[in-house]
Amino acid sequence: MHAPADAHIRFSLHPDHQPAVTATTSGPTSDAARSHLHDLGFRGTGPTTMVLARIDREEPYYTAKAAELLQQLGFATEIDPVLQEEIDTEWTWENYPMPWCDRDEIREVSAEAQRVHDDIAEGRLIIHLHTADGHTTVAVGSYTTGVRRHVHLQGENHVRQISTSYDDEAEAVAEFHRLYSVAVRPGPAPLTDLEQTVRQLLAGKPPTTAKHVPAPTAEPPAAEPGEHEAFLAALFEEERQWEKYRPFDETTIASHESLTARAEFDHEARHRTDVAWTIAEYDGPVGERLWHTTITAGTPVALIHTILQHLDVPPLVTAGEPDDVLRDAGWHPASHPARTTWAAPGRTIVFESTPHATADRWMLYGGEDLDRAAWTIRLSADVPEDLLAQLASAAAELAPAPTPAPRPLSAPALRLPAGVPGQRSRSR
Image 1 (cartoon, rainbow, N blue to C red):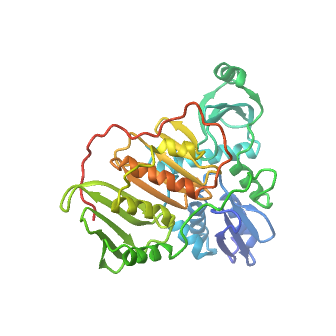
Image 2 (image 1 turned 90 degrees about the vertical axis):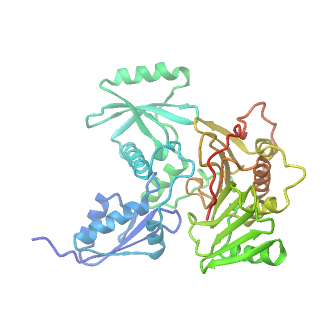
């Protein structure tokens, strides 16, 4: 007979590194509960505590699955309310390099990357050589067991994948040398910051050390709770050209006196992924929508003010072009097949262009962890170039000041694509 599942497991977000999760066990059959948790990816960090830390940042999702399984086995489980909010909130990587993937496909890619990471960390996959290939890392290694004995790897963290498999180790290594020549380096690549943190957490160590932590930067800007509400109230009190409507208890609409611009504010938006503002401009009081933007709850009010100020009184002299503004501010450019990005010094804010997108073509986002941004502004394809330049200038003022550096001779240009009128419709 099986022993009764007389144990209690409480799940909560890790206090020092989120979204990692801690599980605290108690009760006569705690050992059985810990055995099941270990099979589900948790690792012991103390007599009654275990940690789930993953490089795919999907800890809340897998915690929910673990809690469900443990309940089916008869264990009592409890999920902290803050962790439950993370579980209930679906999110996507803001700068995901495979934009064609849907949420389930992203999770499949991430799960495979996690398996590769675990195989390397636990010695099942030995890395022979590595090198940099453009903006990513590639490597060749051999499995100590299993069918896929010798493999080429591409990518880091949550997007690392097996690109090619070989039956013979010599063939895999020779092909790697042929592809990357003198750039090849022995052994595995240095651990990424995320990999270092995950391994420290699983070993029960503090998640940061002076050895691996970048130089301190200013706190990433984000709006405090209630700051948007206060900004909205000040808008109606100080800017008389905006009229207030409140068709629903949870929604306030600000309509400009010209009847060509309006902003909708959702008072119930709280989470970092919740859209708090939807702002649009029209080509007349009853005309078609020219462009629109959606803004999440934590966005700094200075950026929202920049957009509304442009709608109210467009400047006579523009701030220049977005790429010029960001280059002069010391932001770092990077080009990818589907996008161009500019990152602030310290990587607290990113300005991104996806020139082939048909919907949201521009994005500005920021936070301490840009893969799970604390706030996001998305702008449609027809947004005026002078507004983009003003937003770039406002974002540069929010980011820490860079150390002066020579202006690069060439950099990917963050230009508006040729204007092609798209289908327009009035937003709610």
